[in-house]
Length: 518
Image 1 (tube, one colour):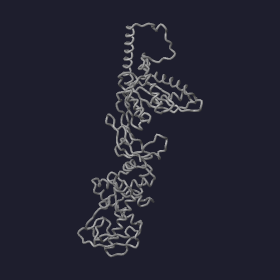
Image 2: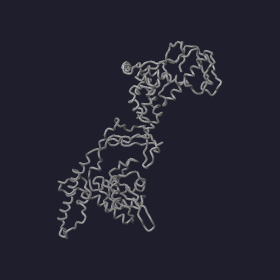
Image 3: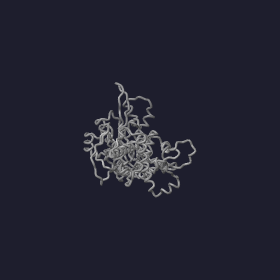
Image 4: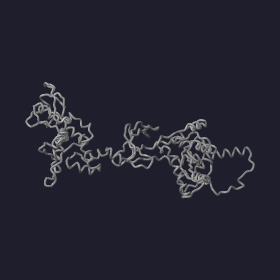
């Protein structure tokens, strides 16, 4: 509220009969003259110093149109009561609730302020030419239109003209109020509701922009944040420095139910895969405890060799102190992917899916023992390791490249007998050296085929199409997000969180985020 600073101020206690009223008990310094708002002075009162309502009340501090208008109405009532007290009048308004006339007067004050700012725009002349506005008895600019002969209400025939959302926060509040009144319906319903009273310049575009940022609609209908383009493959996926399973990814799968003498028991699959050759090794373990994992991992090392690097998720067994100590003593480096981000371990998650698919089609509804399940897993391991890694052409006479070739230098053919004439009973040292050299050259040639055929198919990167409605927004620091649960819970029960930190990859692009959930 603005007071004239040059006038002499007398201290007056303004009181009303109702002490609970907003102006029921006010202790203020009352001047003999109050600077009136624009267009709120009574007829006949000089208005030498005009100030805008937006200079007194900051509408950006309010998220609701109704609250803004109510606060403005109470401020106007207070000023009028103070003015009447200065003039020694006793007809003060002391009601707790605004009257309809007071509410409409406060609303008209904001509309006039918006229209005064609109008249100061450079394109106001063009607006007048296209909209043909006129002033009504309340000095509000209204759209002329062509509905004078209809039975519509006056405010529907000639809606009040407002600026676009980009130029006015008040217009944004009008759109949000209509959106809430239509129970968060879409653009068409919201725009139709607005045009019963207001005509917003570039209305459809303004409504779309406001509804796109509606928190309630985003919570129930918002799409996930767009992920960045796929990065370059890590070195352990494309560089072969030694043997297969030198860089290994591992994960648990299950549970699977097996029968024994006492009833049904759970069992789990420990899947280990080579990050480069894509070969797999399956171990059936009775549980996912630390000791169960270590026993299965020791069997793997005894058959496939000791890896240099192990990539796994953040399961508590993998992060236990005993497992970390074992890995350190064996000289194995552990790499943990980002928590709650299984796509970081996509190269082993994809093979988990393949194993599960084979199990479903092989077992069906069969109920087998632990030993029988071990046998089936060995057969699935052979089938997956014997799959071709690259496209097999009809004109290609070479044998299809499989993970078995990269591990053993040959395919795992079933049902093929070994001829006795191919077996040499006694081999000289020189012959053994030549044989070893031949096998090493064969493996080297197979890995060359791997680089030329298989890796070439991995060159294609995922191309993210431009989403409908404009460029998709990337996640930023401080964003409030909705956290999707892994369990099949309704979207209404998903937790909300705030982005505390961004996780960037080697290419400095955002690959993840650390959240604080509410």
